[in-house]
Image 1 (cartoon, one colour):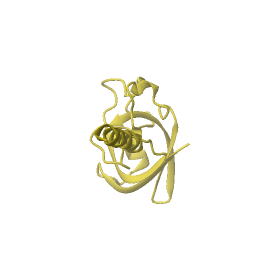
Image 2 (cartoon, one colour):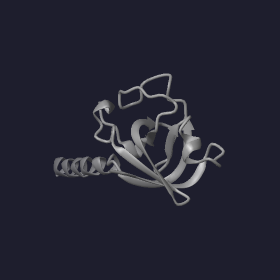
Image 3 (cartoon, helix red, strand yellow):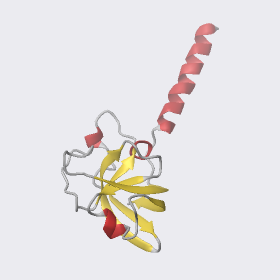
Length: 128
């Protein structure tokens, strides 16, 4: 009976784990910026600070064993704020971002948020 209970418990845990790591294709949160130039992003590509690239939070990106193979890498992300929309590319994972929040390349941030002081609240995004 103990074995059956153990198997049942483990199968329940195994079923719950994928739910915690499912990627999202839209969200709402804060937008910040970072310096993308020193290294490649988690998608394995190089970008410049003026390129329209975005890092998603760890829960939203849900990287597996090889983040370079993440199906979100290279997808178009539409960022909407204050009635304006901008399109960029999913490029990296933001380790310090909460779920729903995004990190934009340093040079592109003022184009999208000209009055932003480095953190803008209530930004929505979707991936197509």
